[in-house]
Length: 274
Length: 293
Image (cartoon, rainbow over all chains, first blue to last red; front, side):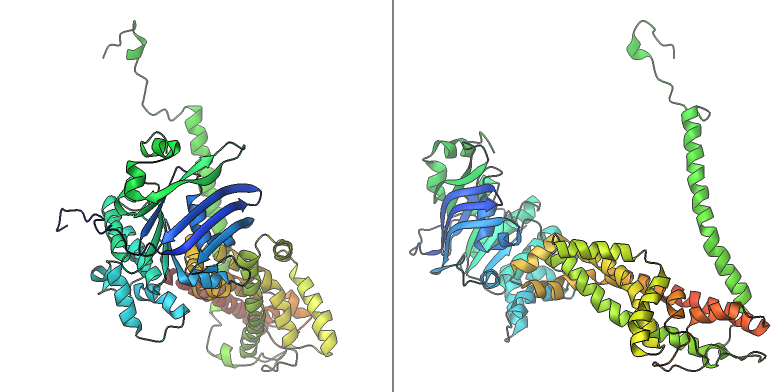
């Protein structure tokens, strides 16, 4: 590695527009009879990274996956509330979840490239959306944005699965950003990666923020401190018998970590539970 | 080294082999039995192959492939029409059973895995794998021969397809289920509709497994005699789809009982050709399966 200086999120300068691109109001999220999440209002702001942190079982992944309607694939899933994406409620009756997913990209915990060439992996979303322009240029741009171009430019025909874990995850990121979705969701994208690959993906996220809006779930609060502009802390409510997740507190990352308002937040951030 | 008996902790256990201890003897005995069983299991296959090669090999020649079956006291001849007939009828069976089986498997594995329809279909397929092949013939007789009014290769192909469909369905379902869940999630995540994710992502990955299933089904169908006895009968002439049609299996059945040396030799040769066809199919399926690894 050339530079020992870690690229930190110093570009976290106050944004002139704190425009909310995606207003997520999850009133109740059920898996059949189990209430997984309640009362969580998470606004996702344009060109910022919003981090979801919290102990296991607090519903952060559930809320994230509700945003692009991935949870629809789970039997018994039921969402009560409203998720407003550029003014449209994505849980509205007329809304096609497939179209939602074409406009909101997702990167998963385990790298999951398709079993096809690197080129075809990145081009997949573009072909799906019937892109008619210069495919090569789009693919190259996506791979460059994902900091993977130099490593794969001579082996674009190799199968995506032949790459290392960190490279596969960057390929998945390239695949997600190739179609230039307005919002990119990342569900613990670094948890399956080694520290060096993790650092590469984190630096990548900070670069992506210039052009995209990112929401990331992470179980690593230091990662949230490093990359997130806004942080939403979720907790678990056991008062009514079950384990229901809910949004405890949310705010600009610096303020949340230095001066948390809620007791639960203070306890979590000081490492008293995880 | 002298052990100090006053402190138990210094009493060293005996780590040497004890081959005549009952535990070791039992282990050796059971291991030997399993090796023996594996060797014995190979014997039927090898003995059949050797027998076929010895008896049928001497008649192997190109004439077998272009000549027609000989009459009672003729010499020479071949069974070209039987080879074509088998290929044709198995072809019809494949054309019916592959789309049917794969589409059903797609429903059972992906679209409605927990539905009652899927559970019923799965149960029916599993039961049908044990269906006596003669019943497939009887069914095709009633459903096709009686309806059409005559024996034909269509009836034979349909009878064979009844034996192939359950195998294709079940192996294709397993192949589709084996596609890793994360890959399916990625397909949905990028905005595929269910049919797009099936056609572009899932089926290509499941294809080697599906092909293996198809080849297994074809191998079974190629060797069945009973279903063809009620549907395609036999013929001494080249393929006429709307007429009774020759096949290798029925030829072997007919000729092996005849009191003519020529015909008996041909029956052996036909058996060898049939086994070789199945063998080649197996190799092809293995090669296809390996190609995508």
